[in-house]
Image 1 (cartoon, each protein chain N blue to C red):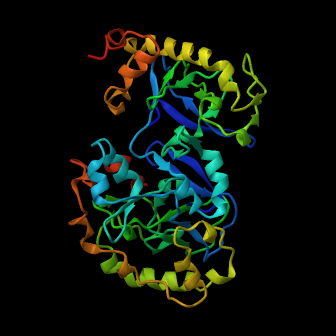
Image 2 (cartoon, chains in turn blue, cyan):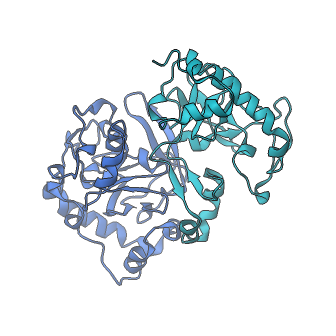
Image 3 (cartoon, rainbow over the protein chains, first blue to last red):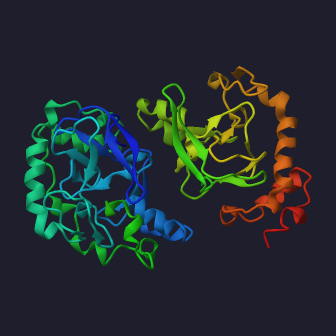
Length: 217
Length: 193
């Protein structure tokens, strides 16, 4: 479920929609977490779906390290990529704000952490835009992500966490907030080989169309 | 899945969002089909969710005759109630436009057709012609014949218009809906094949 202080806005015909903060969301806030309404589509489940759903899943879901495609039930599925994102993946079930997000600012994350199955051309325009978001970005960026996550999550126990009671697995966050567990290293849930072994044709389009992918922002 | 010629639009803080036609959707068009990504939540699954889920469940799901809650995966979950709706559901997992829906107008359904519980009665401000002001489970007893007649009108036009959602209909469901409403099935198919 996406943070409650957000709304869907139309960005442009090229980008489509995006998710924007309606109030300030402080650094260290969980901005998205897997909830009871989100779809967790196993490879077997994806194979049962009619072919028309492959494109929907490709455009709107992300992959876990286990090869499940997670399709957010709410506007979380419209979060766009940025090479200088407002949030990073804290695990494959949560995202955390890595800077203060101002009202009206777009919530973005880094698709390089989402086990993408096709590389994406990026035109996010952020300083240091990588140009291409790759399924193995963790090999080059894992340490940078980990440092930013550690720094941001240090603030997590001191800021409101409205998503905590809605999480499918609240215990993982409770343990981290209480210092009983450390945030996992990105290399624990970003699997560079994912692109090759994505677990089923249901996710692989014949011709990926970067023009309609949210990550083409 | 909702008809592709639709878009989500914010209406007001009281009503929230609604679903609007981006092009004219003619009478007889199948406007929604239950599809494999729609989630059916059993009473047991709902019992295992924290109490805080009560609000989104009440807001975004509808009930089946078996007592399950259905959470539609796409913007169909934002369809609002009207006492004079332009879409009507059938017992076979699809809705049909019972009159033409001009581009820019809102797609609506009658929530009393959705197996409400007594506690789910609500005040209606749609003020459509024949607005009932108060919508409750008991409306069904008075309106069931009128609803059936409206669905029949929609089904009678089903073969005259483009059906972009036809591929999602389950085998035999259109045939059975036509049978229930006394619409010759062959008539409904004359433009589909």
